[in-house]
Image (cartoon, rainbow, N blue to C red):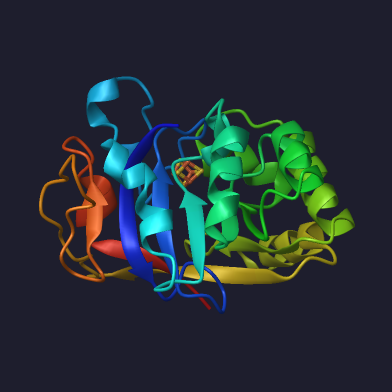
Length: 232
Ligand code: SF4
């Protein structure tokens, strides 16, 4: 697993659950308005977090109720399932954020009961998906992922960032694509500044503030973003 940043406490990333958050490195999409551009490139070991980041969930037991695995796109990590297995003994509820592009990975994760909640990005109406993601997208894979979630017993919701580029017809098309799944709109709140953290340490998590956001040296976007997504 390549983990590029972390947050010790979040009140907004896991519905109804105070959580800690791990940001994975690497994404197969290039959404023009990506709020985590610093996490997209998965090359280079130098930007990944120290081992302490991997121990964060266990160290937060009793202080948070869940852990969120987000990115980047977590399903591009080849050892995601093994990593989720290591989180189970913590007793924390596990939420996965995904862009839905890897239904086979999602199917295995759901089938093995490795997560308790999934949030899937439904980026755009199908006819604007490539534009919204900055790459050519196999939208059948996204539909597959949505179907899997709807057929599973795992709690989930779909979410769409409203970049004020969708007209009414397109917004309706997005809601149709969501089908029976709960759906939330996300808005971009400019001016937000995430709290900063001291440099990561190797012998402890090394973060002093409950709300501190950790990151590896090259990953400034995850922690210094001047905006954040808020679900409405
Ligand atoms: S899927 Fe998420 S992390 Fe990947 S480019 Fe799009 S917004 Fe960024």
